[in-house]
Image (tube, rainbow over the protein chains, first blue to last red):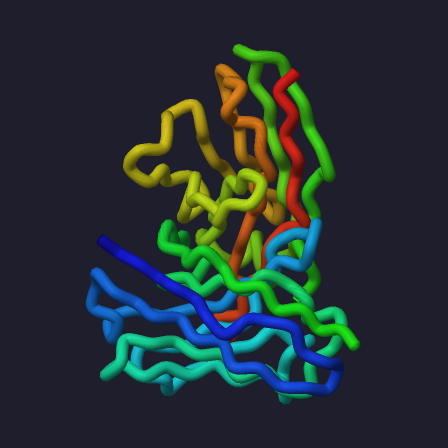
Length: 118
Length: 112
């Protein structure tokens, strides 16, 4: 059974940093693109970043470029999102997903809430 | 990376059909046959309903269908049921030489 479990969310002050993790199991992690998608409270889904199987290609939404870094450790079956210079507008539930949402994926984590507030 | 345009809300009675539109540009919806649709109930993760414009994953009822014309994709739900009440999001690739992704703003479907 495919499982994606996010962790690392919490309350952080504006300008602070946070590292999200996503532990994957039930499939060959190294064979799939992986993604982060977020959803601000009461708002819609927003794609954040994608990473290729070997980490050689990464893509980001414009609003996080230069502040967020997506990475993966295939030996640990884990996906990460390093978030720096956090802003109030980054407050959201962050989901990790297997694959790229545009191509269709039915494998999502339960989400982890990041709150940026003083 | 502008969000795709969806109606904020649609509604229909049980048994009726509704169509949700998703309008983009030639750089996203119109440029790829990679439009997907997601259903999301409150507090839940998104569920894939349609991928590659019109394909249904196994387990999704054939009441759900997708299509595309030019820069606009559509999701049609026929034979509405109470459990179809949810938020629906379209999604497309959005980069010429990248794998940027863009979602629609979401549509709230109310089953009257």
